[in-house]
Image (cartoon, rainbow, N blue to C red; front, side, top):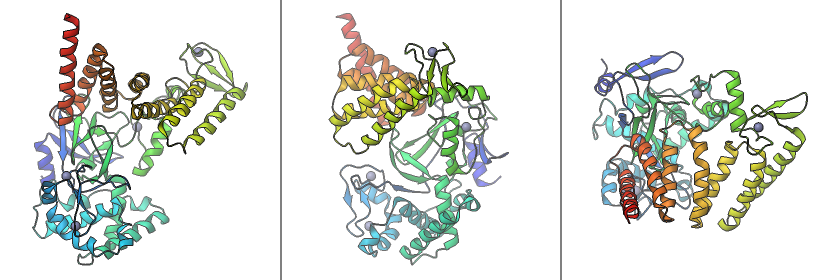
Length: 473
Ligand SMILES: [Zn+2]
Ligand SMILES: [Zn+2]
Ligand SMILES: [Zn+2]
Ligand SMILES: [Zn+2]
């Protein structure tokens, strides 16, 4: 048995060739919802960087940062992170320091990730840091690169980026072809590292986690504890089942999901992607289609080309194509005008207008309406309009329930937001219910021991105590 296979076997997993998918991980024992299937530190990682937000190289925190005084590119939240990153940064720092100011500005997170990958390999090759069965460059070398699927333009871009790496790291022997290939590997294997609320913080390469294949109806979920990638079972997984996570936002029609998956160079054939054509049409009519003429009916509409109308498959009422197109045009004009709005109170009014118009057009469970309501929720929270925000939070819940098979972190997080808003509004009984729902889902997807979960549990306890007090008073 190879060292990796031995290490996986100790976790109850088998590395296996899956027909049509390349490699995959198979459960060698039963996993229950909430069980950690596998976790891994990144081989290399880099924080995301925006003009307004910088992050610590070690833990990705954004508060209390200090710049490395030498290169002025690396940031740290404190001496602990600076120390833990030192072996790598010791090599990286002089290379970054010698860059001209205009070149420093060109250092994207992807370039930094590649610099760190090259340097980490060097540190392992020279024995400065140890190699283990699940942490070594051979695992990176074994990843699929899909070089032959790339078009000329993309290949050229990666080759230029590889040249930049060679220029930045003159003291390291760099194989240009290999670096070019590694850029291609990053684009289909690297994971976006997110916080507990699934907001992206950076990017990391986790060569063992990358072996796990995709499904639009996954049995497992990938979350992060700091930089550590943790895969937890969401559904019961039986011995012999393949471990599957989702690479993409699954709240989308099959066509859109397949479009998202093009970046990974495969066509998904999970149960959700190969459902029967009628089911597919129905799903599309709900997620991207129109609402019934009777606003009390939540039936879905099919297009009848001969009569140029959309007919509700539940009550039989029709809407003519002309009327639909007229509102659709108004919606897209309104949407386009929103892009330039920055003031939140103005935005809240404009988005409410958009929502009213979309309510006339789209199915109540459509993705379009959902996205508008999610935006409204965010804007109203920014404006401290808790009551308004709660209304929109609740409106998203039934749609989330449809889109994300429970337990799913998106649904759990949305219940958590509802609970927090209800708590602020002193709706104790409702807050208790929402926190309970959130905790039931998130304890499976996020575990029970992180500070984020401890905070949720303490809010739940507080709501329970307050509710008990109110009931007995
Ligand atoms: Zn830090
Ligand atoms: Zn430095
Ligand atoms: Zn699928
Ligand atoms: Zn109807």
